[in-house]
Length: 235
Length: 231
Image (cartoon, rainbow over all chains, first blue to last red):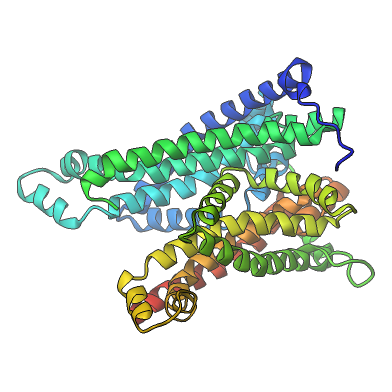
């Protein structure tokens, strides 16, 4: 340990710096695409979970429990190695025309995170007292309009912090994509380490990027809770 | 779907999935997953309790460094923590460290940070009056914490602890990265050997994890109802 010579120049300029930067780019790409898709899918599942139709309820319940209680890594392996047998021929051909590692990682991250997002959305809607709905209905709004004008605007504000936390988790979880060869940040840090044996510097750089993202976003969420939620009387 | 499913690959390797190469070799598979989860769970319970108490401390020099450590760990992906342990532990100890202990150390540090938040919330959830009453009967602050606050707080924390244990079981799958032959690693080995059954293998492994995690999730929900009802 004490004979170790630090060489920070390796990760602040030159080829290895570029590797790390390209890793950050892929991490961001992977996260942004998966965030958008998982939000859409999560919303869809949450609506199913709140509906009155039994088959939809049953399906969404099974979906949530299954994907939340299985490790993400296994889901990534399943989509990467095993999905060709369950997907139709057309989809397989289409996936093969693009970067399949990236696509498999997006599918796994999207489905895994959507289950958590659906639960957060549902508990956000449920946290609005039902008197609000009754009041809206009795002042003549239809069910959909009450949702649109009374329930959802409040529920969305309450759901934003947990949602952003899920997005942050997704970004951190995207590091698992390295196991199937997506060249994101953790992958590149490992790559730099194996080319230069400067693991300490490479992982410090990667850690700082992750920490920076987390701290900034957590800070913004805290600020949001203080400015927007506290005046609404939400703890 | 030209080649259908063939689950015989699972039954042919079931012993391998469950216990690895034991008894002719080291334990592995599901048994090792359990071992990693249980050992890290016990250690991170202690770690979480200690860190949590340090976070609610009134002594600034204890409180703020601990809070920074907890937030730093929570801001990192678990994978990063595992890599850090992989590099740091041998350097700090001056000798090679067995991979399974690298993972246990990483899981313990990572989960302790999350557990400390649960402990903190649990302690802060006990009304102030309790502390005041305890102190005014002449108890030492430490005794007030250990005999009055913690016993009540811990009971409220139990469901969250169980949830954290479920995350822990899922997180042990990352031990695969440093080559610990737990369930996920065994699955990739069998997949590499048999080549043509990835769907069956990973679906089966997912179901195994699901059964275990779902059992504990249900336990946590049941505890939550029961414990709130008794309050």
